[in-house]
Image 1: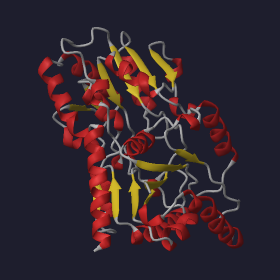
Image 2 (image 1 turned 60 degrees about the vertical axis):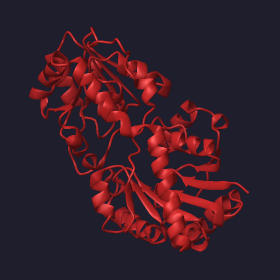
Image 3 (image 1 turned 180 degrees about the horizontal axis):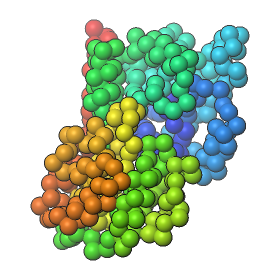
Image 4 (image 1 turned 135 degrees about the vertical axis):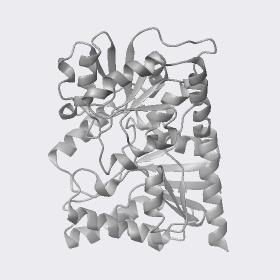
Length: 378
């Protein structure tokens, strides 16, 4: 009888932030049978959400390519109507419970406290319940006070059954440590260090290229990047990632800005390798101050100079990351970061990425889960 993980994601399968899929693939390599359940969230779907899902389904890789089972459960709207809520809770349990052979040998791992999951969480003798919060979902856009109340109530019930809680950032650790006694900071940011490693004999990139690799959405400060591109007209700005066109602002209009869209994960190391400077132009708010971006670790692993707005995640790397805030300072910071780069600085950045290898992260996750299981067994 194999060990199992029933993993409930906070994202659809095939989303460009593939850390969850990478983790589950590596658990398969460690002998687990994994069931990857796509997100259901907390809201009733709106037309724009359905369009987004349709686009994702068209562009994502086939689920058959994954080394684990991908499950796409369904719920009936309107989800908060009392009768429908009860039906959905029973229906979701019927969709998911038969996936696992024995709950007592199964890790139930939730990345979002979807209320309809509560009967499944509370009524089965799971080996360990894991709750993971990599983003401040409670304060994400579109969460009104009514949804926040539902989210908090569901999260509290999940936490009551959880043996261990994983978070990505120190800000999230401090917040959830007030709600649970076993909170482990295990950033979703982990990288294949060999894939990003700079050439042994490599010097600074000769071309004036600034690179951003990530989502272009409500967190992305397009005006900051536009001002930097205008300040440095002889630089190329490659802003790669799935784009919400409302978030790109006037970047489309600038001749030295390229928006190639979403790139396959296998192409990101080459993109970063071609950069003279890498960018993290996040807006400052309560949400972004809880994130720990994987791009930060990717940039470090490649040995690249980094210019970022002053989000909390860069605090522990303030000796390696140039911080600039405001249209008048971001462009000059990019130029200064390129001009002051050195072999010694590149080596230091690569060394600081070492703790974020996939091997170390997987050991940390598995050790924490096993410790929680031993504690539960007494």
